[in-house]
Image 1 (cartoon, rainbow, N blue to C red):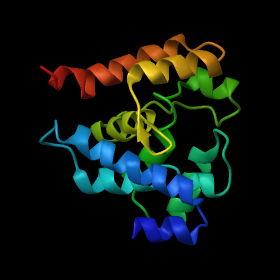
Image 2 (image 1 turned 60 degrees about the vertical axis):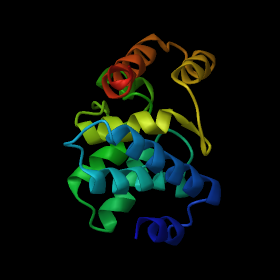
Image 3 (image 1 turned 180 degrees about the vertical axis):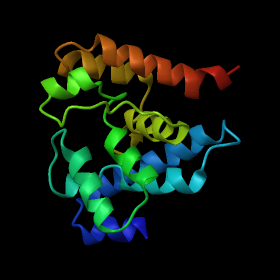
Image 4 (image 1 turned 90 degrees about the vertical axis):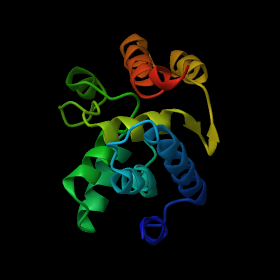
Length: 163
């Protein structure tokens, strides 16, 4: 259903491939947690970039929420779409970025899993946290808080299960 919706909204093929790769990565991460809602993760991961059918800037998360809302998706799915950008964006950062002023930091396990899976997929290829950090250092004016949140998310969702 979600893939059909992406196509119906004229989401570019490369974005659909990215969403599918994020879904696969998210399910790998979710396997570390007995209590993760796999259906919610599937919907959120596949739809997290639906807003890219209309825009490729940071507002794609807000646009995506409006599109998914139109199709009757639950607030849990809408929250994943809205909070997947980066390792989360604080209320202060949202103001600087021209977003509606509020926190976009992932709160639930499922929101964190999709956001982190999205960070660890570039195009449709899996990448390392180190790769993401280097990319953010080149692209973000003041990346330190974002990098700190990224590392915390990685430690919570992945590193604590490796050994």
